[in-house]
Amino acid sequence: MFDHLSDRLAQTFKRLKGHGRLSEGNISEALREVRLALLEADVNYKVAKDFIARIQERAVGQEVMKSLTPAQQVIKIVRDELTALMGGQAEPLILTGKPPLLFMLVGLQGSGKTTTAAKLALMLRKRGRSPYLVPADTQRPAAIEQLQKLGAEIKVPVFASDPSQAPVDICVQALSGAARENCDLIILDTAGRLHVDDALMAELEGIRNKLAPAEVLLVADAMTGQDAVNVAQAFHERLGLSGVVLSKVEGDARGGAALSIRAVTGVPIKLVGVGEKLDALEAFHPDRMAGRILGMGDVLTLVEKAGEAFEAEQAQAMAKKMAANAFTLDDFRDQLGQLKKMGSLEGLLSMLPGAGKLKGLKDMQPEEKELKRTEAIICSMTPSERADHQMINASRRRRIAQGSGTTVTDVNRLLKNFAQARKMMRSMAKLGAGKKQLAHLLGPR
Image (cartoon, rainbow, N blue to C red):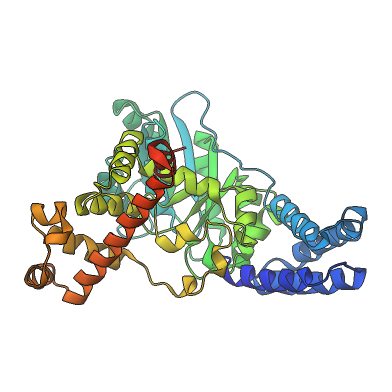
């Protein structure tokens, strides 16, 4: 989402680092570039102006002008102010109170409310809650059916809504449905419109007033840029939002919505949708997002993803195999499966500090197809071939390529990469990485 903004800031700070000592002129020139970068990212004009003013005030102070590393101090100030601009600290969902808790999702048509409802249900189920999905959108054709299909996919019960009923009546009746299913949390998927209008707001106000939900979450499309801020302001004035869920941040969004919503409306961003898959929903951490924008990475989120994908026992067993040089193609395939659970490779690499400097990273295509090709090649091998890759001669490679629908070149590339990976793992063990360190690298923190 912040690719262009990150590039512009990186270039600006690179020039700033070229000066051993900084003058007010150097700082002012750099901040002009930062301001332009923010405006190009579709950040609200007043928000960008106030943001630069705060940095200017701090940057020409004693902490920078007398510092041994003034450029680094300026970057630190920018990071601090970016974090504050987006809310300072993460705002968790309200999960305390008398059950069933009600979460009401609102937003314009096409913002991704229905998919977000399913993503949220899956996230909460993983946290030990028992969510209940309620399709209360009687305006959009097939909206009820869509949520029922998504609920079946993630194994979460869905209320059998009747499209002829009023949305508020559907939501009230869903309370007894949730009780029958022993669910402690209800997610209401409400209707949207192509624009904000009185009829939509009156309908949503009726649901809110009748049920008093613990959370009223606006699902805002990050792709709409500055308009998402205007939408958030309109909904907040009528409904009193408790939070925002930014959807579609993995797309070609410029980032202005994320940087402006909190400052303009005062409503915190609580969650972000980072992909199309139903597990692609994350808590929003302003400090971590600031780190990503400035190319400092987001190691904490990466560690959390690894902790969710890798079981501790699996990691320890794999570490033992690596140390003993007994890592097989079966193990390699299993690791690819775990990697896919963590999301796209490009997304994971973006969380590593300095990853933005890696050549070609932004030109990478979605690697799902590549991983599937690799799995197909390994699955076309016999058990003995997967256990001992060195026995795979030329004729076997032709057979494997034919069986997997790939080429001999693809098979050769996989075997070469696998051999290099084994060699690296063996070297780590010899250098003293040891089983515990390997398990630490692979496993959850």
